Amino acid sequence: MNRLSTPRPKAWVILRYVALTALCLVWIYPFLWLVSASLKTPLEIFSKGLNLLPDTPVWENYIRAWSQAGFSTYMFNTVLVTIGTVVVVVIHTALSGYVLGRYYFVGRSLVIGILGATLVVPAGLTIIPIVDLTSSLGLLNSHWGIVLALAGSGQSAAILLYAGYFRGLPRELEEAATMDGAGFLRVFFDVMLPLAGPVTATVTVLTFLAAWNAFLIPLVFTFGTPGLRTLPVGMLAFVGTNETDWSGMAAAATISLLPVIVFFFFVQRYFVEGIAGAVKA
Image (tube, rainbow, N blue to C red):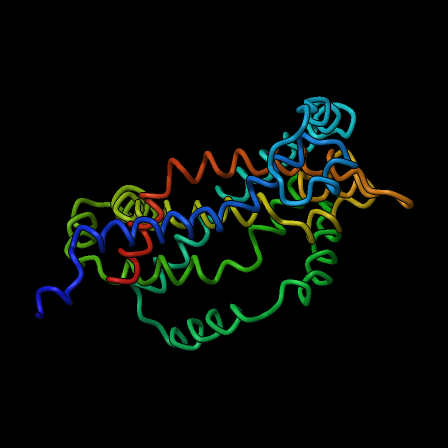
């Protein structure tokens, strides 16, 4: 009697795979619809509804987005800003996390508490002082201004990740390097930072996604210089006073998303390992 009431393991596994497949389809459907809309005419987007198959693929939408709307320039700006932001963020958050994780000084707990509190501060509240400081440095309408603005705000999570990871490493590593005559920077760059590869991968992924998709700071910093716009800000080119080019916007959004998907596909394993390592430490 009990054996008949117990579900068969094979049937249970099949049911689980069916449920997960259905969930995945629901999860990726918006992206599939976006790709489909990028190959339709504006009228077909609304007339077809949720149908993913266009009558005739309109590849001209991608040509219009890439050439006429200037997304080739926006792509270059976004790549430049993203790479610069990732490099600056990894260096300064790793150094900050190393000091917080390995050294004990007066006010250390207070600094960590302040960093944790800044995680809940909305980015819009800090835009005015960021713009004022960048303008004082003469970097308002430049790639470097956008990079420093993105790299210098909202990096508390990365600092705490590094601090947690470095705290769990044995102190004998530093002592051995110090006995060999290595100074602070050499110990950090030659010994400690290479060991923090998983966390560096995690911070790189998070920073890459944040910088690639950033809208507010690039929008404010490129008001007077449209040639410096990034991909998210460039989407505004498809929004007119009386109409919106939905098919062109869908094509531009697809162009913007593809590099992110490819990048995350290759680094997802390191991202998960870095999160697990930092939490364990």
